[in-house]
Image 1 (cartoon, rainbow, N blue to C red):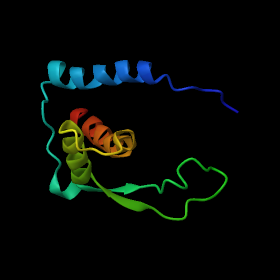
Image 2 (cartoon, helix red, strand yellow; image 1 turned 180 degrees about the vertical axis):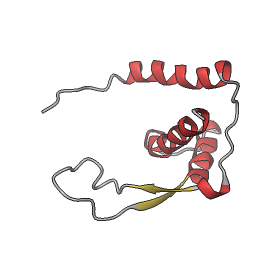
Image 3 (cartoon, rainbow, N blue to C red; image 1 turned 30 degrees about the vertical axis):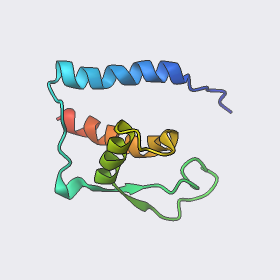
Length: 101
């Protein structure tokens, strides 16, 4: 069994470096969400870390919803801000796929 710990401050430092690289080195300040890529598969929260069971089904997520949640956070209207990490993670994955091309 793993005893890994997530150092949130270390994660913050490394994750701040990623958008800096995308903006400063790659020249991407905005990444357009293509219409045919707005929806994506999402594993249900109740199953994502339980490897003792087979995956029953997938949920559907929407990147544009994540974009809207980020705007709410920026304007101080995000509510449970820490939970919005679940909306930010798919955006980061999408950005990674778009800028690698």
